[in-house]
Length: 282
Ligand SMILES: [Mg+2]
Image (cartoon, rainbow, N blue to C red; front, side):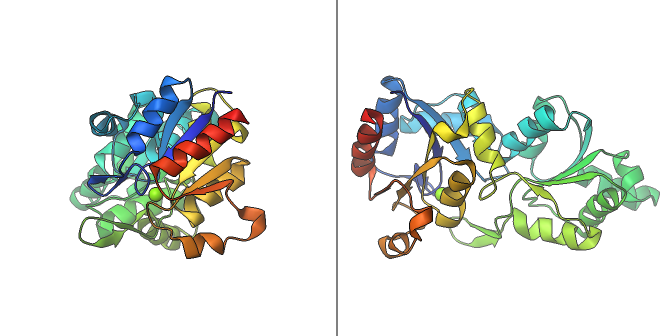
């Protein structure tokens, strides 16, 4: 039976700049045998093509249509489920803008709106051209006026959508505020709670399975996070292989309540290969 593998990136395929040994090869061999591999990440800053060369260099099976990041899932979700949304105020990095534009949305960046507010003395709604939705992720150039622009639009009735709500994310040297920190500011300022696309919510997994035309219940999520990957997989009825190559150790994995357990726990790539062989034999 051909498997649908939804594979998390950081902590599974690589850790920061370093590939996790053997993972790319295991996925390449599964793909060669007919399995479908789609990558799922909450990272809200990059355009999906940015991942292709990096993953290909590692030897992982990849194409741009197989990268469903939180921004890509957000764009797909809007196109499919909220067709009345045409103009979007984007609070985020350039990768978010590009993903939204790729599905035909008209995108006004919050930086542009904030400049107009300052220069012309107008509110965020006027500066952004009365957008139908505000989409927010990590914006490394966040300013007070960008928050104001987003909050003005949401308060005026624009749909409020978050790529994800990760409170922080790790870089090579530091922990940095994640999308959740930025979403919180807009949420408090507008009094509106957003729809969240990324893990642990179900929509990212739904869009990732949908990208290859399959229901998420058929998917096997391969991830290293209990509160993110496992939770999102459980929310859509997918199975999970929990990897101990990232943020979760054996002790934490052993404490998962029985009703939420992964189908398997894998220490490394070799373990994963065995688990997948077993699941494919079914
Ligand atoms: Mg991870």
